[in-house]
Structures are given as structure tokens and as C-alpha cells.
Length: 293
Image 1 (cartoon, rainbow, N blue to C red):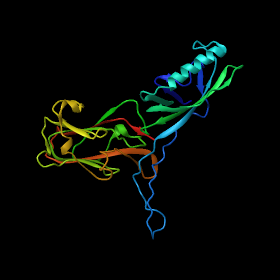
Image 2: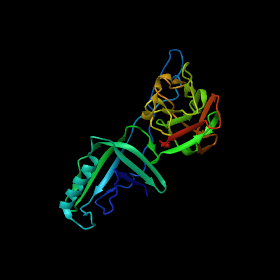
Image 3: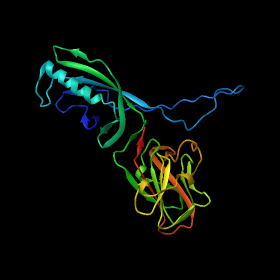
């Protein structure tokens, strides 16, 4: 049976203080942010690809009882206490909360906010109530709980990032680290053909003692000389990074899964890296969490 927790609190309370109504079991799929372009003299509309997703929202319907946290019957006073406890859990406004969805071995997490809650519908004699809350996922996608690190080659095309296999949505916040020596480096997301490059004259080479860290979410880059993923530990190199390809005007590399022909269960993120002057110690690494619609 699918289960939700919010900030570590089960939304199906173990003692039955509140439970999610059956049917509130699956997060919805996000829709595309519509863009329509018509041209006089041409039927229909211009086809547009690469549309971003809209934020997702879904309703959670709770039945609240008069059960005590220990499993006893507390009647209507305990119903009031349970409603207050549930309201406090859903009423956080100063930060995003962590929603965790689990169905068997499948676990997904997202940062969420509760944007609305209904007035409780009460059955006083039965010490029961119904409450509906609307949850919003501002960043759209659900993620793995843990970050994984993948190591690949710096001069090889179409490399599958095995730790991101199975994703159904773009990974927009990956950390990419390239260890030198390498010159005129380019990193490419194969599905979208978005690219990051170290091509600027005057700074286009990494030595064997240097690592270039690319933060796709913050759109920042730094060179470090130790085995770290912390951009603050190195010298900023954001200004010498070349970004090109689809979407490059507004973002850095979005690692995007592709479906093999005829097999929707095969979802792979492919990455390419090219450069010159590489040796056996040169390395490409990606640190990220899988992403899901």
C-alpha cells in the first residue's frame, strides 16, 4: 500500500489518529507549460519542443478520529487534539517541507508546501472529521533520497550514467567534475545536445592537479586542487565557461533521460565528453540524484 510521510511524520498515523482516504495514493503527472505560436497562412500551429513543466499539485484527503496516540478512544476532545496536531503539521509556512512517497521498494521525495486546507467536516457524535489539504511541488520533480556519484571517461561519447538510469525527468541540479589534464573540454547531454565547454582563450586547460567543478543548478564553476565537490574551496571560473545548444540562454546542462526504441522500461541518461591532451588520470564524474515526473 502506498504511504506518504511529511517531515518524517506518517500521514497514515500508526494509532489511527488520522488516515489518508483510499484513492489518495499516487502523485499526479505534471503538465507542460503551454506555448502556442500561430502564423498567418499556415494551418495549425508551429511545433515547439523542449517545453518546461508546470508545478504539480495534488489533494490529500484525511479522515481524523478520536483515537489517542496510544491507540485508545479519546472521544471528541481527542478529535480536537488530533485536528490541532494535523493542522500544525500541515501549517508550516516559513520553509518547504519534505514529502516522502513509498510504494514497496520505490521511494521518492520532494520539497513541498501546503497551499490550502479545507474547513474540517465534523461528525460530533462519532468523533470523526474529514479534512482536505492541497500540496504543491514548486520544483515539479520527485527525487531519489540519496545522492550518487558516477565516474566515466573524459574523451568518450554516449556514455550511460548508470547511477541515473531509470529517471523519467531531467536532472537539473547535477554537479559535474572533470579532472585534468585536459584541454578544450566539452561536456554534452546527448538527449538535448546542451553543452558546457572550457574553450575560452587564455583558460582552456586543466593540469593533472586541477579539477573543474560545474554546478548546473547554480550555473557556477570553480577549479579546485583537492578531492572535493565544494566550489567554495576553489577559484571561481564561471566567467570562462561556454554554454551552447538548446536552452543555453537560460540554463546549464540538464541531464535528460532517453527511452530506447520500443522499450519504455529502458531509460538512460547519456553524456559525452571530449577534449585533448588527456591521460590515464583524467576523469569525468557526475554527482546527482535521479529525477521523476
